[in-house]
Length: 243
Image 1 (cartoon, rainbow, N blue to C red):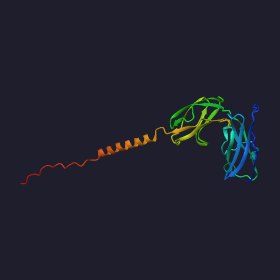
Image 2 (cartoon, rainbow, N blue to C red; image 1 turned 45 degrees about the vertical axis):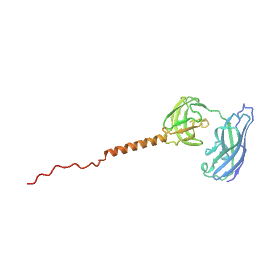
Image 3 (cartoon, rainbow, N blue to C red; image 1 turned 90 degrees about the vertical axis):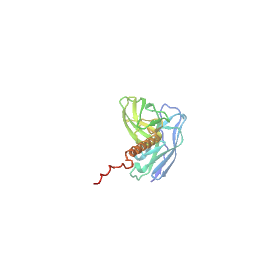
Image 4 (cartoon, rainbow, N blue to C red; image 1 turned 180 degrees about the horizontal axis):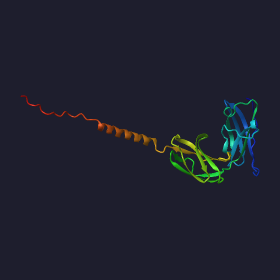
């Protein structure tokens, strides 16, 4: 596989006067993955960007999908960013050389999310109320549950009514670094991630174990009470006198 390095280009917003630039610093192959290292430069370090990877296979029209790392929405400004692209999973085969390009634009959330705070605890099977503002009134929102960059499961579709009741299924493993992904069904670029939170069991495991012990002890005594007790023999009626 022959790979050509190409400096990334950023789609700049015309009215911004500050300098913005993407610098691809290195490209290497590691097994089935292409690792692209880059710097995201902006004089305003408080900005974040939507960053996507494109290739020459379709003349840089559609972003590739099998990617992870510093790619997608809400990418902060800074150096030493990496994008990992699983080429084998996305492409069946290709014989020509490949060029890559990184494009980005300033990230502006299409909705403002409320009701989820960083580090909060969400219990499985319990309904949580989330609220938001913004978005078009007629759009449908998709809600997914992620742990880090890994999709755990879809939580369904919501009308843009400004609030929703969400429930984490009981079979979701407890853990940290969970977050909601809310996206517009019609526009794949309109995506918002909630702050990360922790998922816990509805009832602590210790309480469940304690209940099991109590039931087991009760069952033992119940069974024990039903077992006949060996009592001393009661004398029978006297023998009839002999004639």
